[in-house]
Image 1 (tube, rainbow over the protein chains, first blue to last red):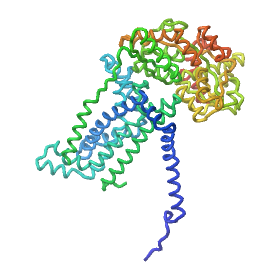
Image 2: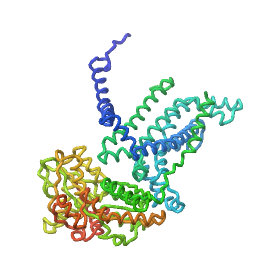
Image 3: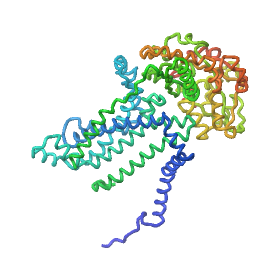
Image 4: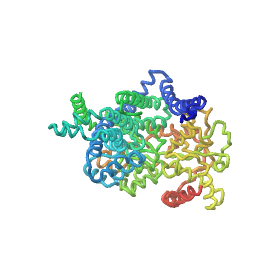
Length: 278
Length: 338
């Protein structure tokens, strides 16, 4: 009955070399190369000029604005993600499928559509725009619009990370906690959150990276006012089109550094989360 | 561990409460100029000088913020609530839009400042690769099979609308006013464009940084800036013998300045563009001005060109817009057919 062990494609030395070689060279060309260019261009004139480029008031403001956006968007979407995943994983209710689909929506919608949609709601010609204008509330082309657009594009990240875990864990532990007399809040803080903490952290890291890097949706609603409503990605484009490549690359290193930190954080999270496969 | 996790989260949330409202509200000493894409450097320089002069005059610290993109995108943003105290565009259609659609600008905006509210003018001209290897001299070279042309999307960019209309006007003149031939001419021209960016500066980077195309068509002011930035060993400027007058209209956005109380400063700013100092800065960025003295001093920058106008060739911007740029207009037809 012993079947002859046939060498599979992946077992041949040649095939293995070719596949690994292709993967490595594609990664180098598509990712490694551009990343190297960003840092080498940014530091071409030396470390001093690099810092000067980062310290120009407009770029500094763009960094601050980006951080200020993340400071709101990340916690709000973390809370939203936990609430949504909690509702979907632990309860049965009508419209659950719809809620799940709705959370996924920003993944499939182009960010620019999100930006335009916000304009149609909050813009001066939109539904709420005139009322907001009459009451002196500035939403579009200001900080609130940037936060709103960022919230939209990053809404799914936390929920998507923790939902499968919550569903796998079921609600047995929560039920036990409630039976033992713990309040709902106590159960959330002491049972649910600790169980999902690594997945949650990973979701938060992803959300943050995306908020700081978002271009399309923010571009529509920011108004591109120099030194006022330009986030870091917009500032990079602006500097590039100002013929200021050195400044653009210097600003780009900040985003690249955030991306690298995200990868490091992802590795740490995965080490601590044996249940996560890949 | 769970307890400290909770505490840290609460701490983060309360910190958040303190940071939700950064104070980026503008004082009355700040106005916003919403402008066309390639006016970046020009208005950067003007704003700096304007602030310095205001400070010297009455000790006031004035800031003019700037926003630049394709003018139709900008007009749209102002309509949707971007708080522009003044607009400085590159053709009147987008200013007129603000008057027609949102009543943001008064209908007689053209009479509020001298020279139809246009402090300077320019014309579409060409940037070619160094040494002009394709020997591009005039508009009919742009429709040759071996020439690739770069300019922005006429739907979003005033700059590109001038290019389109200049080419059309040229073809009309060549063919004794034969519209069918002019239609075919711009159709061929558009089919020679590999990339349409949304604004003028996007097209410049497409041409120079990405190395796409044989000719960049953009305002003469931009062609000179490109040559200065990239050097004669990379690009040359060709000013065609015939082109179209491009005016740069300015307007105070009444609805915004009345709400913000910034009318005086906004008006002063636009008047500054007409002042000798303003005109000199404008000319130094290779825009043509009315002041004969300044033009004489800069005459080597500005070769003689026969300039047609939108009024005489197309019967005004309104008509040109209806015929060519409105939905279903000639531009749509040639775009679809290209």
